[in-house]
Image (cartoon, rainbow, N blue to C red; front, side, top):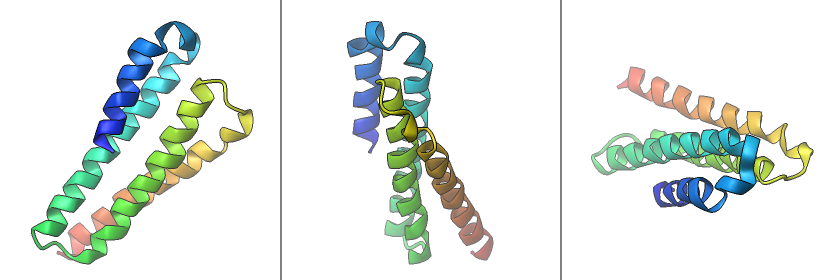
Length: 110
């Protein structure tokens, strides 16, 4: 996930710079959330490897779903995708919020 975030960031900054125009901030937002939640998944994976409860796994899954829905829909919209993708973005945001919420609950339990 981290590598794909970096690749898409570079692609947007260099390969699509002239094409995105006013949509460049949308692309940049997608990349930012993509990379933050790739790190979230890495931290969860490292915590699980160090013996954290398996109950953290759904948080990582939700973060991945969030990347696909939130960032994926923004990438598509920035490239001129259909407008019906707009309502998909908040579903990804909800997945991010649920992931962070699960992390909070597990943190409070431990």
